[in-house]
Length: 416
Image (cartoon, rainbow, N blue to C red; front, side, top):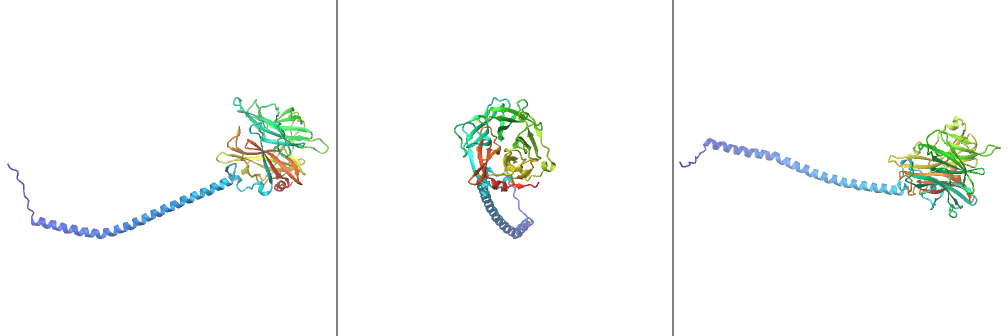
């Protein structure tokens, strides 16, 4: 059969219903439009304001970035203009003046010794028309069992301008390959060299040693091991000579500055250390050297200057980054027993160019060091000068010239 298409004719009721729906839809669209347009306009306003806000925020961020860049540039300029040894000044040393600014530091001279690698920690004594300079130097040797280098002591002669005389150099023939930090001093007409050395039978220990030297050839007459058996490592005993009334000078050692501990050595040929009894008000005193600069340790031999002894010490502190700073100061003590402390530096002695020696040879890269280990006094044009021989960064030698009067007047003073 042929396919038939069915035709449907809508009724009047259906047509009326559709017309009603159409009118209702138009009415709803009009009502919706009345509410929608304000919303759209408000949205556009907020959108515009948001866009403007984003632009302002972007501008502020650019300004903030430029401000941070400016601050960092200023910080960099301040650090490079005010640094120690090429490094930012540690918090502990901020606002401490350089000695040149007060007139304390008159001159700083670097002393080169081409014969040896990285001479440092020197001690100096006067001689006719000049000085003798003793110093430590290290010789690298990877075959060494305990540490990969030998540490030795050498001596050269200087003229009065601290310039080397001829090509003189002599290694002091000490009975050890591990001698460090020499201190030389005269006790009447006897020349002594004080040093510390590794105990090769027990490498955890270091002991102090004394060598009596021929004053012309520097050959060793005898050596004495000095050990009080108070701690594993013995270092930095400050030697000085003292003569009681009517008696010959004897050798004394400041074992510790605070609490004050002093030994005498009446017979240098043997380990005959005698502990000097001190009253508690002398031994236990409050020192003005603040804890942030580290524990006070030995430095130069002490010498009679005017009516008291003068010496220089060192201390050390560390930063959170693992960097160690060794600094120096001066102190005085009574010219006779009980040798009570009479004065001390108010803050570390700094000078322009301090710590700028490149680190070489066996020196540790995480240390910045100024290490005083000897001094001499000189009169020049009616003024007394103090020449301090210092090791710097365990790599070089510097001679620091100070005004004696300014130095002594700058100390904190103690009443006894």
